[in-house]
Image (tube, rainbow, N blue to C red; front, top):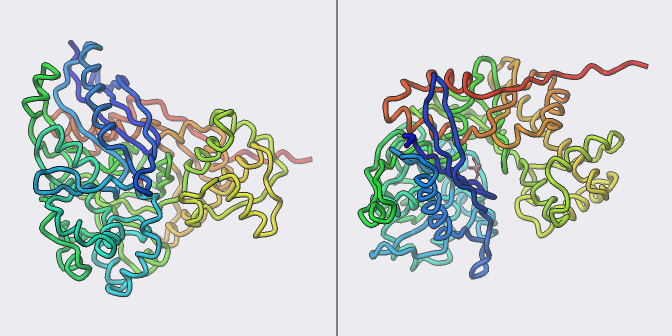
Amino acid sequence: MQKCSLAVDIGASSGRLIAGYLQNGKMILEEVHRFENKLIEKNNHFCWDIKRLFTEIKTGIRKTKEQGFSPESIGIDTWAVDFVLLDENDEMLTDAVAYRDSRTDGMMEEVFSKISKERLYLETGIQFQKFNTIYQLYYLKKNNPELLKEAKTFLMIPDYLNYLLTGKKVNEYTNATSTQLVNAFTKKWDNELMKQLGIPTEMFQEILPPKSSIGTLKPDLVDEFGFDMEVILPATHDTGSAVLAVPEQEDTIYISSGTWSLIGVENRFPICVTKALDYNFTNEGGVNYRYRFLKNIMGLWMIQEVKRNFNDQYSFAEFAEMADKEIDFHSQVNVDDDRFLKPQNMTKEIQLYCKETNQRIPESPGEIAKCVFDSLAISYQSAIDQIEEIYEKDFQKINVIGGGSKNEMLNQLIADTTGKEVIAGPSEATAIGNMAAQLMALNKIDDIEDARNLIKKSFDLKTYTKKQKVEG
Ligand code: LFR
């Protein structure tokens, strides 16, 4: 039996369990289980089917053993900001409502009437996204105060899955920072902020940093699987795990490319200056209390939705190929506009935007895809300009990580648009970062720099440079 650690990485459209171990100075990964994730409609809200996700994790754990692995540890990461509330019997009080649900429309502005935007930013360092946990909780406070009163426990999605595995209730640090309720400097829950908004403080749990072990499996699960293992906290916020796995650091801006494009740099301290607030950069907590100074860009979500609108007739690769041929199509949309967060129909929303802005309306799948990719590249460029302005320096390279780094056409487009060297990979950055945190906790890797060197050695990276225009 091959000893391994298990990284459970669940994104907005799929989840996977990956077995990982060290061999001959390299990190080896093997996918053992993959499953679909999607929004479901329940009681007029878009929700996550959290119970099914847990069933899939259990299936994956069983398959690990069948495939000849003996797992020593497991770590879970998912997207951020979403949560469940438990009652006094530890039953879920609400559906796990998803951040793309429109319930938080207008909530951010109401919160600003109680606490100034500046104060919120100075204390938490977190970007203003209408779906942050703080605005979701404020919605409940306004529309369902009884429910908040009943709530005894607040757990974010990975915290809840960890609770189902171990029976232990903790809030993991990196994900907790995405709530906009954690003080960026003390790294503790900001009880004053909560009190001012009428959010009960008692339901929050102790914040534990990544690499903490929270114990072993519950006895009934040990019986079910026939083995026990340690449950370790990676950066449970997927972007925190992904950024731990950015191999290229020197003079480099990263883009964690998946459903979202997260573009930024890693810091040892939060930057809460006025310009960062104006440009809406976040300072999310990372492994070893590093900070992710980054910005959310709408990302591949747009093309995922377009693909769905075309009834999945074309693959992502085909969309990229078709877009590449549309050299004369130049309409662009502002991908950061909230209208693209969860439109009824993404393709129609893009067309409408082009019509409203007097641009050529994209009709064919190739034109729509070209419009999306060009618009993303332009948005990356503008975020890079803002980073360089704040840092007062130029960055030479961009390291694209995550599933989107497999999109060669987009990588080349980023190199052509920005003029910078683009290094693509690793594509499984989130699972790799999750694994790296577990291996650090198990003393198999020393520190972050060690982890990044290991990642560089273990996975193939590809470089793209700006194509010279052929004259004549
Ligand atoms: C990426 C991500 C982003 C976060 C968004 C919502 O998967 O975690 O970092 O802003 O999803 O949670």
